[in-house]
Length: 377
Image (cartoon, rainbow, N blue to C red):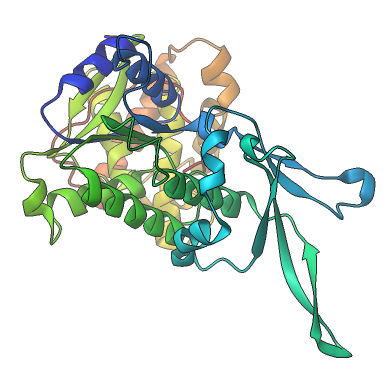
């Protein structure tokens, strides 16, 4: 199955809300593009609105290095959305940002021609003159990557409310991963802003939401399926995973799966191990499980976990796992694992399950994409 077929399936699904979890590199952004193509009107206009990597790419930093970053600002690239900027005010964005409690101020810098919308955003701190507290000056600053992502998300939340865009392209919202570079606290707040958007609009339009972040997925899934307001979404919401196997992707229902990150990885490893399909990239997933367990136990090295599960030559085995989980191995070398390394995998994986008694419930669909390097959320 390819992205276009899945996009068509999603467009025709009876559920109003579809929440999808996928590892990075499965093709979430490609799915959003395929969905856009699948839902275009006969005259080629878009039926819904989108938030994805292309949305974030409209915002780029002008670091003003020639002037010592005195006028560093976030530029907004020209697009078809600029004509709606005139209806946005700084207060519209601040109202969305308030939940995140930003510690900066900002001003819009418009294009010379108002019809071209907002040219850039200047972020600043307000600094009082020590000798004259009433004399407040603006000191430009560059906000962090996480703060930038929050700002862009809130910019789009405000833009969704501008007359003439989202209300005209009213078939659906497609939201792809608004939580990159965010800490857990801000991921939770972002989830709450998205849940509010769902609650306000789900009766008249479809929502397709994709994410690689297991915490973000779990929070939204719980609110939709088990939360205080879950009854209103009964029969209207679906949770699933986007998986890849042998170059083909599929959409799998996952209501009975578990979604703590280490348990999700263990589900993937369990199916590969049971089917005799352990590949080199599975060592990267195994290493992430070992690191998660080590972190839970309060130690810095996963070699400690290897010793706990009865691996006598723990240092040597740790070196093997490190080597096989290096991204250059599973990106550029053979996917096959030699018999000695398969024995190492067996010893570690079986030892982990016997020592810690993980309850995995339903096995997860097999994944054969190259995962993010160890330590990446």
